Image (cartoon, rainbow, N blue to C red; front, side, top):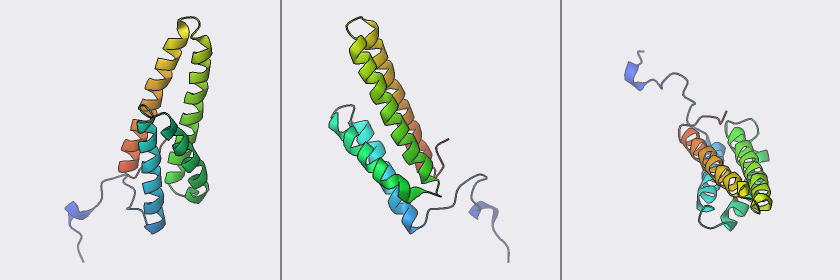
Length: 123
């Protein structure tokens, strides 16, 4: 029995997720989508954080656990930075804090989407 070299997965690739993981992967993708949408419609981020908190327990022991942890951490840190930036907006530095928080939030969300599409954990 021989295995063709082209049919082997690339080194370091995670096998395709099972049925449970497929559903969780879809939910992680939905949360990342809601986060991206929150740049235009603010309340979608709140829906995303609720979903992430609800699904994190189901993802324990899978590579998706790191994605839900990332989503939760990213939301709350960005939220805290925006609150601090809003308070500091009385002085000009607050606007820079909020812009920086938005850029950082987008970076973490896009990085998560890329890793999720590759079936890789968010490290």
